[in-house]
Image (tube, rainbow, N blue to C red; front, side, top):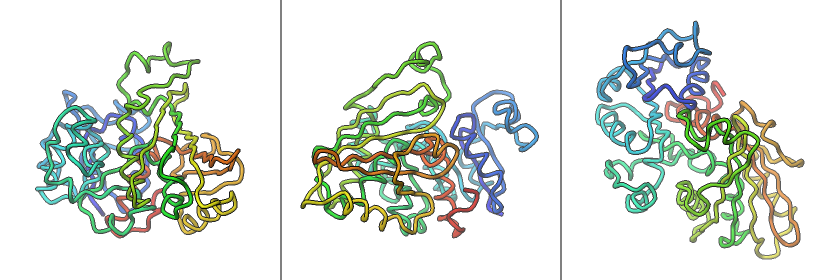
Length: 335
């Protein structure tokens, strides 16, 4: 059995991760950490786990956690995660990090977007971006996997194959995304308080969202030339799910059939990406590790629609997919 620990086990992504790991035949959950006082049982924080997992939350140092785990999932916020991950790696465990701390390859870009210097620049270089559909072979050899952001996954999966094939222009790409409220995390805020977000749709952080440089970085790598997107996120009054509508210019006279054929070929062997004919809805991917993608050409523009569950393919499902690759297991195990 592979011993697994979770740093910061009280949030939504940690709960979804635990649900998946509890049905994983190769996993033993050994440590769950939290700063909560009194070492409460995990079932008191996540009642749906009552009777399913007999573990108490403990406030342990990262090195102590690493002693009891072959792989550590860090569900800590950015900044705090890097401090912990550095110690876990030094102690010899592999890490799948949910935060943004290792997604960006340039520490200066990180500092500019996150408002503070990176505290573990040394390990940025060894981190592998955890999108198996693009970086599977590198993930297999990694010690540190930077789990992608939920919004970026919904944008990168439809765009990367078309940019790699040179069938869409790298400029003038617009990513218009809608996310359920769980994407903001479990800690409430003024904007996610029920009376504020219920029966209301709101755009936020347009042009300033921290997932923007992550999308640009991975798409630039796919295209082999600079890509810069306009990213407009919206909060939707539903629990979970992301739907992204993406607009781009076709290049070289590419037709709708050409573009769809490239997507189908690129993802033909992928277990979790579906190129669908009908326009997808968030209910189509609810609770699954799948991303559904549809394509149209409208008045000379490429329109891509993608959807996924932000807590599964957008977070914890992707993390388990990466974990399976790290330990040489079938990629679909527990998914």
